[in-house]
Image 1 (cartoon, rainbow, N blue to C red):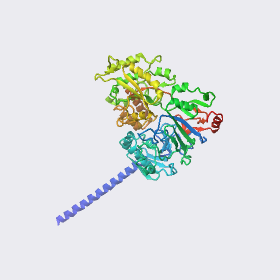
Image 2: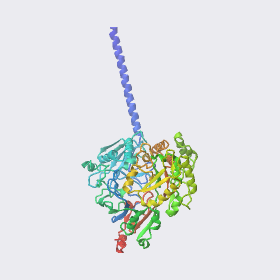
Image 3: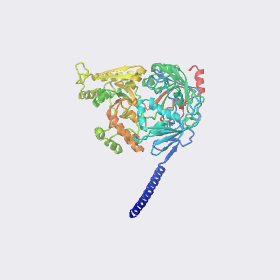
Image 4: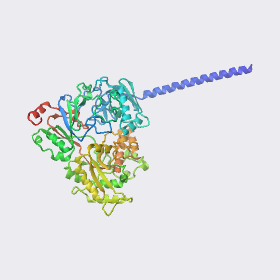
Length: 637
């Protein structure tokens, strides 16, 4: 009897304990749910018509048009300009062949950049976007009226397909980076698409990155998936949603694009005052001399000049004298491209920084500029030349702190010396003897000694040889004096000019010693730096021609990509500028800081051209009366 009572008491106690446990678990669940609800409520979801990484957008929701366009610009006429070289494809994403001019332009993106705000973007295919303050994901709301050129709607499925196609068939350097950082994209419904961002990588820059992705027609690619691969060369440009479509072409001679009469986006605010030409014609020439003659004859009617000799001496023909052709210098507010003679660090001879410094010292910018470039250029030292991101003086404040955090990976001289700048040379003669003596001493110290034949060799008997690779005849007269200076130092230097197709292939495969090239820069750098200077992509990235990377670079890129305010961003970019300059991966050359443009006097453009784009193709227009006058006078055919 007592035993049975004891069992009942034990059972009752267990029941009560279980009840208390259930109560505790339920209370815990309620508390967790409340905490989760509170956390969700605390994280603000932002919905906007545009996106800016730092600060407010210049243009409010529902703005009528950008303030740098002429909203009343007339539509009609033809823009014509020249391209140099050859083309055999209209697929700009393939590594095979050479794509024709403007091949990528018939594809549109979810967002488009503003030309007078750094790192600000507004909705094109997307009418709005939503994202949390943590940047864990972003949702784009696609405009229901958006259409491809075949009339089919642009949907969330097309966006997801485009993202995945670029990962599967696009450039390896792009795909490998994006696959890890953006693990998933999904269509929520017909017009809503969501991208998820990995917590293992900085998220700054992800929204603008996916917003700038070209959007392809899933239907078009899946109709013939084998022949319409993104990594295959083809003359069929495919289906895009942009304002222009391919009209006609003659391989290696010309390409003509015409405005799509059924273009869906004519009245979208970001397009008002833009896309004003009925046709855009690109004439191909073998070299710049032939192109200049074509411009004089009116074969094409607008020329953006990039050759100082031509700008200084070639514009003396009758059409200039009688005012039929206008010659203008227009402001350029972009960061100068970090360009120069780039050394391929995959080559063992360039591993020693003393060799790289010696090569730099052999270049005489002052003589080149005065004697060959008519004194029209300025010399560049910084990767962010002339901007608030350029490293100056000794590092201090937050910039000093982030450099010190690099520890033993950093060259200690960077902390105590001003940033490496381009050396000065005497302009009076081609070879500055003082700089050549310094250069030769550095080569001696690096173990490249001069033999009885005047050629430098290392202790293995290997010749110090450097071959310049180019496909531009206009560079001949600029490279050859540099080659001569290197030869005067005992280096077996040579210059090899090849055709456009061969140059493109060898540059992609990094099959060169030195080329003229560059690293395009931005005032709001972000995750794109991984493809330019990151370790993971260094061996194959087409955006990193030198192959530079290192433990003193990667943490700075991480800091830049994860920066939450402009002060942190600026400090890390200046630190990166300082580190890159110290590596001497290129011989910095020249920059202009303005646009040289010559055009037959029938083109007009907005009075308030924006600082970050000349906008010839999408902001300018034709004055039909002026065009008629040129033709009636016989100046133009």
